[in-house]
Image (cartoon, rainbow, N blue to C red):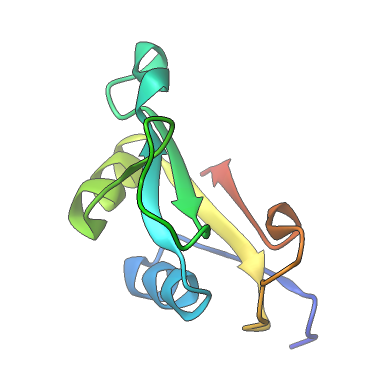
Length: 96
């Protein structure tokens, strides 16, 4: 598999491993709840505490929204260090 190859998955364990290996946390934007009960899913790589703009979730809660919204997770195949990089280039959420 090429280093920059994109992988699409709905596997909860694979998603969690990728996010945690890049020091991320499951999160959502609660202000966006007007667009749906789950808000807008995010991954928080800031390393800080949640703010009023982003709420950390448990993995169970995050995956419940992920599955309810019928999303898939696209990421690079390589487990690269994302520090200082444009993280948007490394992952995305898409509809299944």
